[in-house]
Amino acid sequence: MSSRIPPVLRPEHPASRPLSRLVDEFDLDLRGSADGVEITGITLSSTEVRPGDLYVGLRGAKAHGASYATDAAAAGAVAIVTDEEGAELSADAGLPTIVVENPREALGELSNWVYRTREDSPLIFGTTGTNGKTSTSYILEGILKQLGLVTGLSSTAERHIGDLTVVSRLTTPEASEMHALLARMREAGVRAVALEVSAQALTWNRVDGIVFDVVAFTNLSHDHLDDYADMEEYFRAKLPLFDPDRAKRGVVSLDTAWGARVVEESRIPVTTISALPEVDAEWRVEIIEESAERTGFRLTGPEGRTLETSVPLIGWHMAANAGLAIVMLVEAGFELEAIGQALDADGGIRAYLPGRTERVSGDRGPSVYVDFGHSPDAFENTLAAVRKFTTGRTIMVFGADGDRDATKRHEMGRVAAEGSDILVITDHHPRFEDPTSIRATLLEGAALAEHQPEQTLEVSPPEAAIRAAVNLAEEGDSILWAGPGHQDYRDIRGVRTEYSARDEARAALREAGWE
Ligand SMILES: CC(=O)N[C@H]1[C@@H](OP(=O)(O)OP(=O)(O)OC[C@H]2O[C@@H](n3ccc(=O)[nH]c3=O)[C@H](O)[C@@H]2O)O[C@H](CO)[C@@H](O)[C@@H]1O[C@H](C)C(=O)N[C@@H](C)C(=O)N[C@H](CCC(=O)O)C(=O)O
Ligand SMILES: Nc1ncnc2c1ncn2[C@@H]1O[C@H](COP(=O)(O)OP(=O)(O)OP(=O)(O)O)[C@@H](O)[C@H]1O
Image (cartoon, rainbow, N blue to C red; front, side):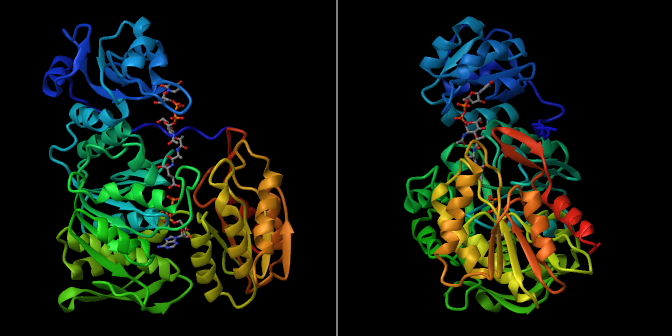
């Protein structure tokens, strides 16, 4: 069965605005007549058009959106915004046409105009970085809820509007969808929003037209080098978030050396934080107590400010994420003590942070954790956290994404081998790549490790791999299945098939008699 495509969330009661006003306000090049044309929404996908939409046809990597203008008009689009090439491609659709030089660059401001997003805006928090965006955003949301605010969230895993939850397609949706989401949140009375901002979002103008109250940088490590030429280019993609047009203040983690570069290049006031003892930062996170369920830490900051609290997640990196979330809230004007009480009181963060080192096993048998880590740095941190609470062996099950950054695969294999006693290499989302050759590259990487696991197995498909791991495991051992996290599908040759690693792991434990 194919996994369902998540719905695009729009305001339920959209206001209508005249096209003529848009043309006047932005002094736009309109071809055709705007008489009587009323706009109620905006989209860049013909498959998502609703009656009254402004359809934005832009040149993509595979197609020009304007070539779908006839479909868009049939679905109720009332006008199109496109470039010169698009104007020609969409001529047959007969829509009033606004021609701009770069429709993608115009999309954010147009969406803000359609939904008036910046009017009566909630507090908006944005988190960027290679790892920790989702965790930091959920922790932020958890604290804000506990502080009594109606909250919203947009993350890789889910979007939340108050109590409504839908699964996500992209980490950061396209600008038209993002503004629609913010407008829907405002309708629902949301007063504070945690948004994950991917590098791609900044490159592809997905958060244009939004003014963040506080933004944060978690870290930068090897990932996405299919979209960016090198680490420097990937780093540069993150910087526009630290610009006065986009954000008021920032919090920068110095846990990776890239943090210091963000501070150097930031054009907004920033404060710094680190969870590493050797790094000098304004705010410091110090681990004071760790268990397989919680991580306790002390946060100290300028002017003698200090807080002892804990987060129901494991590993120093989760304390680092929690510290970052707390300082973002301090920067937004919340009291440190109230934040600490909210975090201590909140038993909910674990329950609704899906697939981040999530323990899926019961009291008997090996501990099994499902994690979303898919970069060498994430592997290193999560393996270290799991090892710490394992009396027996650490067994790691993982694969790598097909059609995504292949240059990280050797390092993923190497890091996984360094940190585990048994390694089970399997498949993840092969997409259009040959899964056998992906596994071969991971195995080559594993062979480069100085420490070699007792056993390295290659098992496909992943449901067989987790069963192999569970069958090898004994009481006291831990299994870390890295990659699938919260996801509810596998992408095989472009088809999304329903699949849950968390359910598969539980089934494997049951079959082995542990549950
Ligand atoms: C590289 C990238 O970001 N690509 C995005 C881009 O695709 P594209 O340029 O290939 O689009 P295209 O297929 O040529 O289509 C061009 C235009 O025609 C429109 N169209 C197309 C077909 C049709 O029937 N009707 C129609 O209107 C499309 O909506 C689009 O506006 O525009 C599409 C429409 O918005 C996006 O869905 C697509 O994201 C793809 C799915 C994607 O996987 N992006 C990843 C790399 C991504 O953005 N990831 C980040 C980071 C995740 C992380 O941190 O790990 C994220 O934020 O999710
Ligand atoms: N601060 C951190 N430093 C290093 N690794 C981390 C950190 N936080 C989380 N991780 C690792 O990265 C994995 C993904 O975490 P999370 O989903 O919070 O990151 P993300 O930035 O949202 O990633 P993505 O955008 O790919 O969803 C975690 O399961 C863990 O393995």
